[in-house]
Length: 442
Image (cartoon, rainbow, N blue to C red; front, top):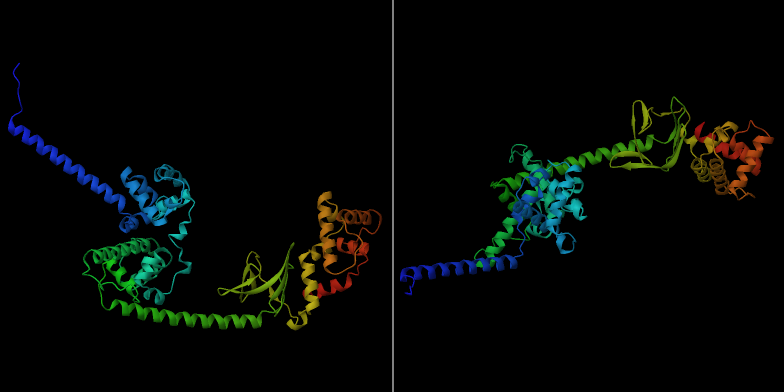
């Protein structure tokens, strides 16, 4: 058989193909190695991921979803210590759509945090503690790179709101809450790119001053595409005006609080029998229906608070949240209703242990529909009241005391209130305690 060899041209072409293939494999291998070695977070991807909604995430292709999850992981550093792989998190993302507003910007990151047990507010901080505009304008580039989420995003939110108000940003496609996180990370990407250029060439040294006040603002404007030499001074002026307005508002609020503080102490009542006594020392006692409360009153963020309930004064009287009628001051001189320290302590004990309710409760309230266990509970409260009032009491067992009250109604005076029956059994004179209560509520 005749041996045949490939034509010379074909052999050369084959060698060329092999060389190209080898070169591609080498390049591919180098890229893989470089990708493995390059752990630098991609802040541009993070900027997209931090405002991504769940609905936007859901319609992405698999590769895009994994890129978004990787960016969220870079934001949160979850996989440094977390138990779930990104692929496992991806499988659970759709379940979160039932619990969240899937159209809301940032809902994908919220779902990511819910799945991984992280607090989303760490990365999308709420606006309650945002800095003032004056403080935000002083932020440095170091505040961006070192405290991106805790400081830079709140600062961006304040600055972006001011830019809207000054008409440097137009439209409402994004609210500052959603826009600020994305722009902050875009600004971080600009800083990182400048830093890489400096490291590579050394020719841009000094272009970025990381410590200068206002440095973050300049980078933020670059991310927003705003260039105006007068802008910083204009916002500084706005910040000064806002500061003056805040100081004026605070002074007005302080004057109002001082006026209310002088006017407030005294005895109040409602058209349906509610009673309220407010002392100048900051304490109060309130009785409305079957509700009794004592505590202190003060102002919190400009709101009058009676214990945990907001209250306010107007032409109709003193209103307390959750009570549908106003309290109005009685004719009694406020000083006449003030208690001594000892009386104030007694009144507090009486109110704490539902003294007034027991003065209204008769035999039908004690028996009525109550169970043995409920009567023992009431007996224990009465015993606690006597002990705190320093009344010597031979009976220490609530079950025994409840039985004695039962016997009192079964074999003695059934017209007594529970308070009177308990006092009679215990040898307690109710008059001094009734007098304290009457002093407040007469």
